[in-house]
Length: 221
Image (cartoon, rainbow, N blue to C red; front, side, top):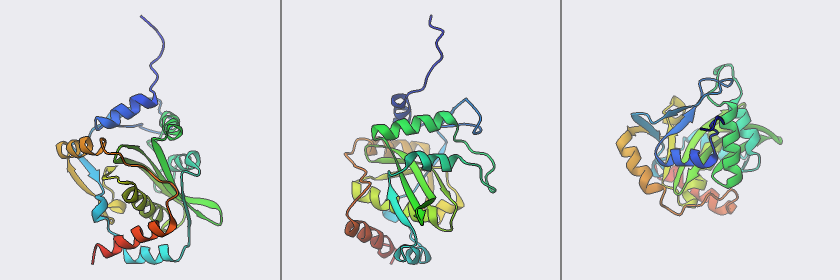
């Protein structure tokens, strides 16, 4: 019998996501990972995304420089940092290592928001087929993470994604239309989504991206 320690790989992580599970650590310094498949799962329906009018003004003002997949490592590192309103994080070094590997393999993506060239907000997640698993976001400037989320949704819709998994529901996400669904319903949506040939386009045509963002507001009218 081998005494070598078990090493979690990117492939095993993807298999877990396909089955509806995701990892979390108790703290940044914790070495252990816990696998969760909650009774109720948070999702953000892409066709029902709510774009607040005030945020649309921010988007039109081009306050932030928004990009995708330009600095994944810095984005996940910022998401893992302690904040005054969140002194502890569930992203340990093992999760950070695994997601950087997923990014290198093309199964993880980030959206970044910058002010004057400085990274002030963003998010990251993993993807399989037409499912995107949103992991975490951060913001050090007002509306930075919200703008990143809008750009993520626009890219997902352009790329043919049908499921945006938010894991849990927060007040922040509920403002955009996120809701909880039973585990069985989530598993059904997941099984259908992972079989679709979606593609994450980090740099779509500007005109197409702007049309998709504008359509988010119109769909509420």
